[in-house]
Length: 267
Image 1: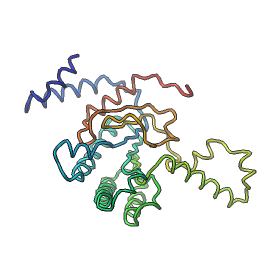
Image 2: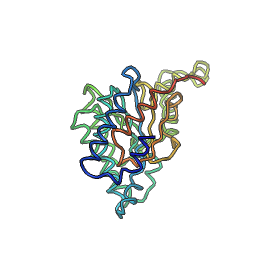
Image 3: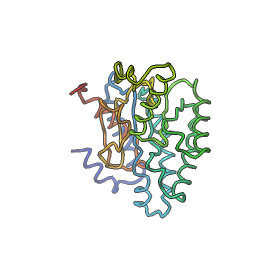
Image 4: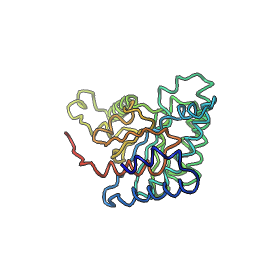
């Protein structure tokens, strides 16, 4: 109850005192986390950039997208500190690609700059999505970032751009069929031995662990097609705050919620 009172009255507490109380609460949450229960792979749906801009009275929603992009480096630093090994960031869905050009082009420019900054900071950047659906420039920026950081140590950062969970599964099956056909294996022969691992080996995230924890901001409680295959056993955490306002304490709460759950596979 004490925490809720602080959050309710937060607007009445100004300046240094507010900052001190926040740091104390952040420390309290962080210190309560068990060191031996940390998700290896965290997926994040960065939702609420447009709603944040509108709530701030801004007419240009791209301001919200830029603020959201600026938040990413903070999240990656928090993940590194917590011992997370892989982060998947959903930056643009396949559905978003149907937006009018006047909305899509500025958003793609923000994504391109963000990916270039991630590569410049030596994160191990890996494009995740249907790059063939993207404009040539955007696809090239993603490929270049992946190639330039392929040997970078530390945190792996999957940037999901032009991503849709159904499209990923369809692409995986298509890739599998082409691979088997190149070996002279017929569809009938493949059907006799096909199992889930064959498909998993052709996903965008092949070779990586499935996400242990999926976080979605801005209050929506659905995946909207994010990592449909990989999230079969993931834990979900839905946060009310819009992504540009996501704080370290919100991240720590997600880790606390994850640590408190007893993970059961297959039930």
